[in-house]
Structure formats: C-alpha cells, structure tokens
Image 1 (tube, helix red, strand yellow):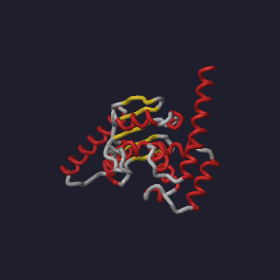
Image 2 (cartoon, rainbow, N blue to C red):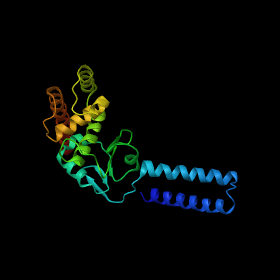
Image 3 (tube, rainbow, N blue to C red):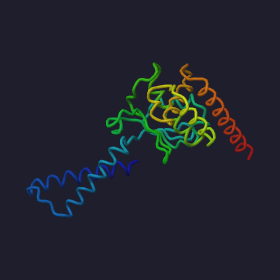
Image 4 (cartoon, helix red, strand yellow):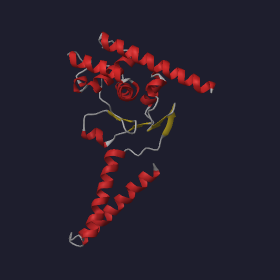
Length: 221
C-alpha cells in the first residue's frame, strides 16, 4: 500500500515538473519528455480510477482483509455465515472514482475476489442501504465461486422463463438478479418469490454444511 502511494506521488511530481518545464520552453516537447509525461499520466489515471482510495486502515474479518473502516462491512460480515464469505480476499471502501463515473454503489472483482464499496451508496428497499450493498456484492461472490454449475443453470433457466424480478436492477442480468435476491434474502426482507427463496435456502444450506464439515476436518487433523 505504501508503495502504491509512493508511486502515485512520484508520478504526480514528475508530471508537475514536466508541465512547468514545458511552459517555460513554450510547450516545445522533446520526444523523450513527451513519452515520460504520457507514461506518468497513465499511471496516475490508473491509480485514481482503479486503486483509489489508498486507505491505510486495515482490519481482518475472519480471513478477509477489510480496508477503510466501513462499519457496514464489518456488520455485514458478522451477519452473513462465514461459509458465504470464504474466499473473499479483501473489501475496500471509500469514494472510489469509479463511483463518480457510474451509478454503482459497489463492485465485485472476480479475478482478485475483491469487493469495493462506496462511502455513499444509494438507498435500496427501505432498509440500511450500505448493508444492502455489502450483501449484494457478497452475493456476486456466492454466485461465481460457491454455487454449483447445476444451481447456476437452474437459476438461469428460471430467470429466462419468468418476468418477475426482485428489483429493477435485477433486470440487468441473471448475475445482478441473484446478487439482489441474495441481499434481500440475507436482510430477511419479504420481497422474494417462492423459487428464489427455495433455491437460496437449499444452496446456502449446502454451502454451510460443506463449510462446517471442512472446519471439523481441519480441527481433527
């Protein structure tokens, strides 16, 4: 984290220095200086968009690293069964530039198994919106990493065969439908149809049972 911050500051200082030099020279830029300035600009923009905020407040919730001191994340992880968050590597919160460029309140990155949460999420369903966003992003993790292929196939088939959705955002895709359904189910809000309630009950019961068996095996080994 300190290395990221140092590289950001260094590139920013180089950019400022090059701007002053170019201004003094009438903006006649040699090729080498132009390349350096472009590289630095790309690095700065990448860190602002992808890596910002560079937070240093780090804690652990179970085996998941939590950056940024978001109390809703800690609360969400205390509500959700640890089997459903197993494998999430980190959660980051803050006013990520991505949230200013889109309407998103959170994001789940499958490759790194990282959740990013906005400090100012949109209201959803009349209950704690920041909790809902955390539940929603955990739902993406459950869909991609914990459901079986058969469970995803059955859910997708039902999604394609019916028109009812738990929210307007759920109409975006089956992935968002499941994430919203998971969030609603976890928050114990009465907004789900029988199919979604049943498949979530069955799938999460299986996931929790397998997790408990693994934990017992670890203790006995």
